[in-house]
Image (cartoon, rainbow, N blue to C red; front, top):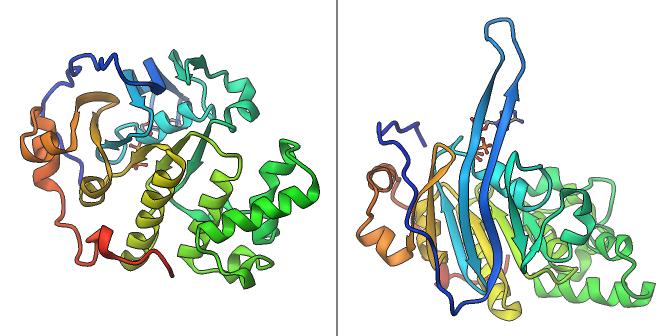
Length: 290
Ligand SMILES: Nc1ncnc2c1ncn2[C@@H]1O[C@H](COP(=O)(O)OP(=O)(O)OP(=O)(O)O)[C@@H](O)[C@H]1O
């Protein structure tokens, strides 16, 4: 997507308070400033990548986070996962503050699915080793229990048994993403951070993976933060949408409201500039198998 300059200064949406709902993930005035070193052509400085973001993910919902490239989506995701320390504010998972030094503990509650399954899978490990590794690291069960759990989850994500001993380079793109999903789920987290999980895949495979994510959410009652610049995909998947612009959330509304009556000028420009979804992304009807 091209850079859009609306000339509109980000303004915070009204506070998100739904007192009767259980909060899975809460971001409190989260900020990240990257320091820039002096280069040959540039003076030292800083980039405010995420600016005072407060958001709640209610248990069982899918919240879409949309915005053009460079608006701070991945920086935000990394802070939620404890992969990057916030410059200000904090993150609460199930009411507990995330401590970036306790990444292993966080991993039991929140897991990522990234855009490129190839680079996120260890090329020297087999499918079952990759999926079983979190269980070994967390010392869950006996070796036999772990093998059973790995087979169960691989079956659930639609991986054929013949692939269990294969390496990532022997798999299709869609299969690699299925393995990444199985690995994300093996510790039974409550929350998945899906950062552009289908944008590296062919359109037909995208739909299968999105269907799979929908099925898994229903089966395990998961909460998703679904980060995407593809508004066509977001419209099919999410309950609410947070629109991010220049590091700030400028609008947070239900999917219906965002797509039928967007309130912020930036949201309107984003929708106007979005490409029409490609044919074949009528997600619910497509089969979830490869
Ligand atoms: N490690 C870093 N050091 C300095 N600046 C960074 C670093 N990582 C990201 N940035 C800058 O922070 C801003 C937000 O980047 P980020 O990757 O979070 O955006 P994004 O919305 O995820 O973009 P994309 O959709 O292209 O991945 C950008 O201006 C980017 O150049």
